Amino acid sequence: SYGKVKKCKDINTGRKYAIKMFPRQALCKPRMNAERTTALDDVLREIRIMSRLAHPNVVRLVEVMNDEHHERLYMVLEYCKMGPLMRKNMQD
Image 1 (cartoon, one colour):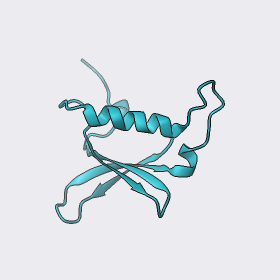
Image 2 (cartoon, rainbow, N blue to C red):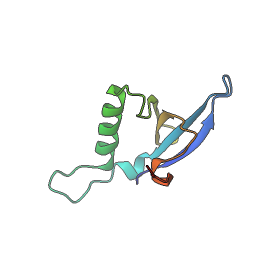
Image 3 (cartoon, rainbow, N blue to C red):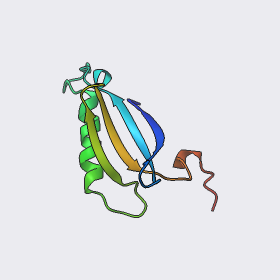
Image 4 (spheres, helix red, strand yellow):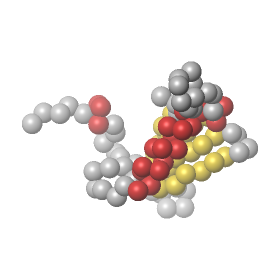
């Protein structure tokens, strides 16, 4: 896990969102693998994939923000009031 997810609310509309926050410093550290990739590579791939998806069962990516002043990357996602699927009891 590279970042944290927090719930937020748009002060103008009252709409709730989930914001995934990533510290740039942690994302840019090179890994010791053959490809010499970084966590930033994974996050950018996630952004590319999510920006192309449009399905009612997939969380929608609303916006991506790069805050150079605080050296953070933010992914604004639609808010799912039921929480993560991992916490649900899957009984059928």
